[in-house]
Image 1 (tube, rainbow, N blue to C red):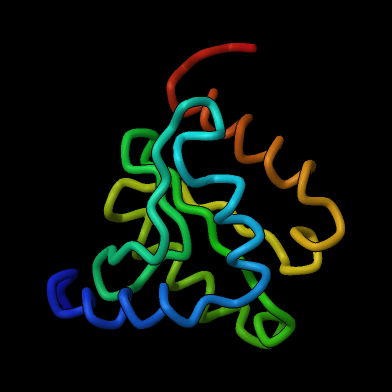
Image 2 (tube, rainbow, N blue to C red):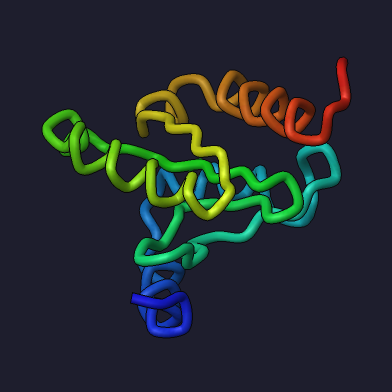
Length: 119
């Protein structure tokens, strides 16, 4: 499936985002993290990534409890997204709800690495 075909799917996912997605989105949107622009529900290949920073080629995925049983599927998804030139980092929903600052710091570190900017 191409990104163009996934655009309506991405739009629906944006409208029906989870509380956890919304919580992280409120901290990533409007270039709040390292001045980088993130997009929400971004089509890449046959998938729609939760969050992406196109300039840093970074994808952030949030995993709920059901993903504990989807290890192989998540690994395949990650491999396909990485084949499009993105680095994928994953967080559990509980990480966002329990340690949002830690999640944001981990994302910030990945942005610095992507742009070769040592801290």
